[in-house]
Length: 466
Ligand code: HEM
Image 1 (cartoon, rainbow, N blue to C red):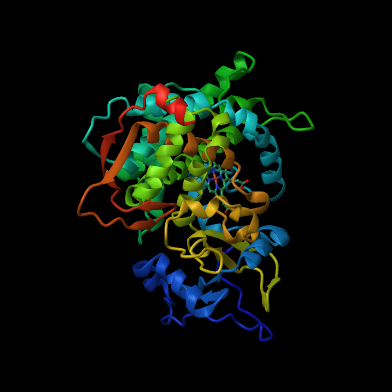
Image 2 (image 1 turned 60 degrees about the vertical axis):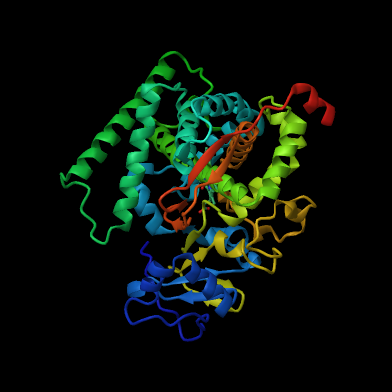
């Protein structure tokens, strides 16, 4: 379905919003102001805002948790994912979970869900810890790095191992490089004002074709190899190969390929960003960093964290919640209505594109006191149970809520605990860190940080304080 809105009928009033310029609406301001445009629109016009974009591609921005809940849960059958986002990622992700709809999506979600049960996800904890330890083994006191790049390489290694069962080595590196290349290629295509057809043999398209061919042959090869030896393997791809629907059917190789690409792309970058923003926020808030270090010392005493340790590390969890609040990697979600619907005082026709922004809602003073301040403590006294459900929604909500939430939270917590015991990170001078809203919320140009080794805590002292 096209994203061009059908015109509203005379009986439907239009929500308030900026008027914008003829033809281009607020598209130019959006380019210039980015997320601030949404924040200002919410402040100036309220919970339902009409945003005119270029050439009739208008959007309705929702800024109230109850309205967001209407779209994600109560009336979710009336919506599909946004057609534009799907088109942009179709070649890469095919009909995987992020892009599929209706019965096909329901079946795929049912098949994939068991692989994401808590006990199964916890089995990946050793991989996460081993990779964190191996990745940082070469780090030297005082050296500087781009922490966003480091976290991306670390979570990439974890994703390649947990998805495909490939160990660190040239093959795993190649998978990571090709997937990252394709992701960048797609982003570049989406952002570019001139869309060169993918069939044209430009150098960029040729490189992308080679990356597609490599990844496809790798995934199909693994599927064939696992099937020929009658299953086995603890990685996500093996679990998806073994998944069987109630009627005895299994995923085809094509579906398996689409789902693994989707899991890699949906999971690796978002988790890397969570970690990067967390180190950035801790570096700027020495009080919070000290409290985290104290908790890690007391509870872990220098040992690597295990999943069962996490319930004794409430401050660590609070730090990650607060980081996801202020810098949600998925900062915006869109839906396209497939039938007319009503929201608050308004009725909208089919073909309306709704946007909901974690960035805006998570910084709303109605739900978070001093919303711009990094204060993990706010999560320690049961705030999550008092908040309206969709005032805080870093993983979305409703039936299409992130399937990898447990995986991501485990990885973020274990890596933060493992690295936080050994290192602290200091922002190098002279940088302005700007969040750049691309497909995910990335720090533009990275985050340069100086690595400091924390002095080891003697075992006896650690147990004496516990
Ligand atoms: C901090 C890390 C992550 C964040 C912030 C995040 C965020 C989200 C959000 C907001 C959605 C909902 C999108 C929508 O409804 O439009 C989503 C969906 C999804 N995520 Fe995540 N995600 C993260 C990590 C992961 C991981 C680790 C995986 C897999 C291993 C994953 C796989 C998926 C998939 C497959 C979907 C689509 C689910 C469906 O539609 O049924 N995500 N994620």
